[in-house]
Image (cartoon, rainbow, N blue to C red; front, side, top):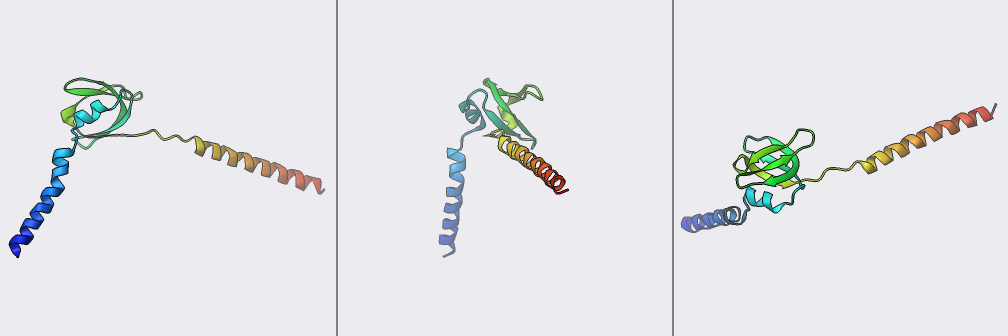
Length: 119
């Protein structure tokens, strides 16, 4: 009975590990699969996270384009993971804030006009 359970557990472990070992793309193929200018988030092996746009790719690395921090050349060996990210747009939030402020101003003006009209 112990042998059956042991084989079952080993089988489950191997099944769990094999997709990561066999099917996972390496960082270089992930980055080369993205088009130039794609916004990416890169996690380095020293646990730092960098964001920017994918620049030119060479055999050993790629360029991370960051308008505020400047371009940075990264080696594929220094990168532990990469993922695509989208910049958040705050347009809806800003329009709602503006509408709220406008509504507050109109309410105050109407309250002042109504209070002056009574006298």
